[in-house]
Each structure stands twice: as C-alpha cells, then as structure tokens.
Amino acid sequence: MAELKFEIMETIAVLSESPKGWTKELNLISWNGRDPKYDIRDWSPDKEKMGKGVTLTEEELTSLKKALEIR
Image (cartoon, rainbow, N blue to C red; front, side, top):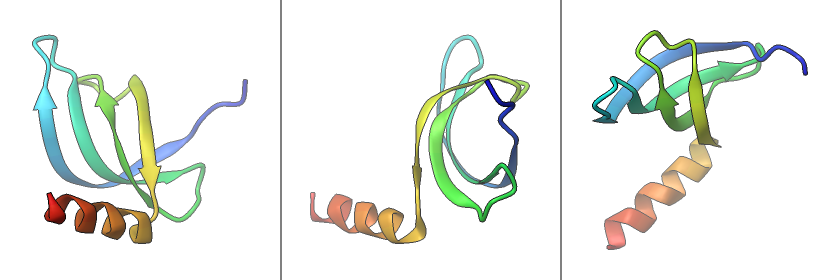
C-alpha cells in the first residue's frame, strides 16, 4: 500500500474528545500534495494515526451547512 501523505493546513474545529485523547476534528487538509479539502475524522493525540473520515469540497461543505441550517 502506498504511503499516504497529508498536511493539516488549518484546524477549523475540534468537535469532541474521547477519554483516550483522540479528537474528532474539522480540518482543511492537503492529501498527497493536492489542493486542500475539508475533512472530518478522528485523530490520535500525536496526529500520527487517524480514523475513517469524510472529505468534502468547499461546495459540498456549503451544501452540508445549508442542510443543517434547515434543521
């Protein structure tokens, strides 16, 4: 499996923290040197391990925000 490279460009929000120190975060991340996208996932305290997450374009994030405002 190829190595996954990432750079957290900006931490926008920490949504929660588990008793073991893992945090669920909304970040702006560049994956493998590509343009940054918005990303929601769990991170270990040292940011070396991550859980499964979802990556969104700016347009998808805007659509999600609109959908949540309706609720």
